Image 1 (tube, each protein chain N blue to C red):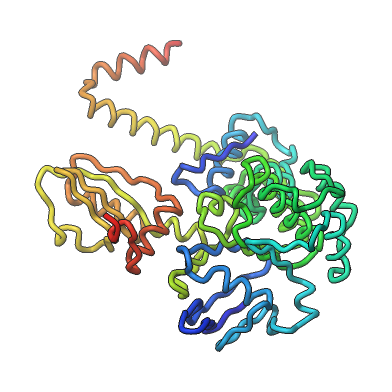
Image 2: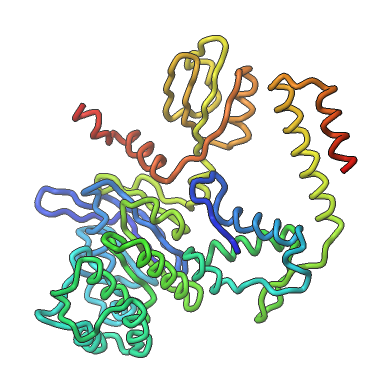
Length: 299
Length: 121
């Protein structure tokens, strides 16, 4: 289990991570989402012990990570801009990682390299961006660690490779309770693999919730009324966003679907329908409430 | 066997549970036959195994499958509750269809005629 308690980190006068509280249970797939510069990568780097938090407490299985060698052996970090030794091949990188990760599964490594059609003897610098990502993922999975930190790992992978990587994660989560923590802003990508998402914005955590609950707690409706409605008519439901075009209202509201449905029915609509909200829409809504709306600044 | 619609408002575990329910109620999956393992299905669909586990628990709650520790999940024999559920679903569908017909201005006589024609087949 990973626990963050009031974790802060700043670089000069830039507050990258600000009082983050977070709990990640073992064996669940955690998605870390956030706007650009929200502090996702900084948070991951603290998790794997690259940075030390300025204040607050960050523990994995109740131990602090920073300079903790035994704990670090159970973590693998796939950085956004991965580092490979100069002029190295995947085979050499594997041997390098074997020095730190005693349980490195070499057999699986070769099997996966073959499966992904990568030549372990070819210089990594001649690989494409996506192929480099694949090498990192394969190395990470084969180390047999308990925690895998992935920073924008699906970025640059083609759809087939993405499905394959997800299946790899799924296999290890099922088999040996791997805990992947995936930072991304490709929300569609996270939707089908994460149990739990944490939303970061400007260094702080906006929400951390079960994906299911998150989706069940917010709804989008389209409804039309014969008479114009004002805000007071909607009192009783928690409106996040409302848009009106003629007699057609598009409403985003929080709360229980049944209650919202009842409320709208009581207002005697000509028609109404409840539309599903994607994680992307939830993300936009939540950050908008927190004052993040670039479109407004540009147009 | 199972396909997932990511644009649907239904959660993934519900979709999986519903698809299995459909397969079971149609008799495509026979009673006492084994369901794919959590790991197998997770790898096949590239989704989180915890989601599959949740779908299976849901199916167990609905009384459609039973699990044997260390062996896996199996389709339960058709129960009274499943029959009841099918009937309820049928009434619900019918009600919606009739409401839809009313909205479209199809009168009672028309509905009755269509219904009778289908029943005779």
